[in-house]
Image (cartoon, rainbow, N blue to C red; front, top):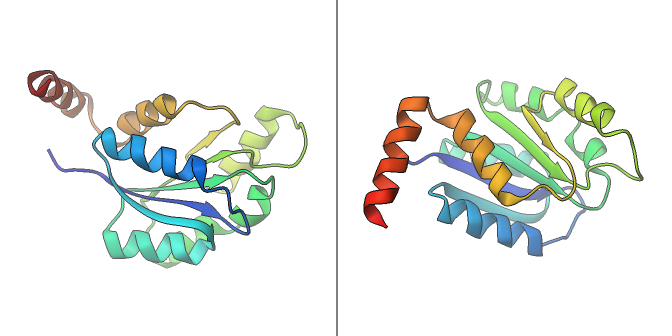
Length: 151
C-alpha cells in the first residue's frame, strides 16, 4: 500500500516548535511520510513543499491565535498551484480569545479547510481523521492486518 504524504508546519509568525515536533514524530510513527517545514512558515512554503513532494494533505498548525488571518486565501493558492484535490487540515489555538467553536470551525471550512481541530485535540484524533480521509475501508482493513502481523 502506498505511503501517504503530508506537509506539516506552523503558519505565519508563530514559533511554537514543540507541538510541531510531537506531531511530526506521531504522524511518522503512524506510517505517514511527513515533510515538516517547521515554524514561521508562510502559505507559500506549505504549497511549494506540497507540490515538490506530491503531498496528499497539508497540516497547518497555529498556536498564537492568528491562524484565521494567516490561513485566509490558502485554498485558492493551492488551487492556483495545481493542488485542487489536496486535503487541508488546520488546528491548534487558531483564533484569539474564547470564541464559539462551531462558528470558528465554519469560518475555516468556508475558507476551504477539510478538517478544523480545536485546541487540545489529541494526535490520535488527527491520525484517525487522516486515515478516514486518505484510505478506503478496504485499504484500512489491509493496513491494520499488516500492522498486526508486524507486531
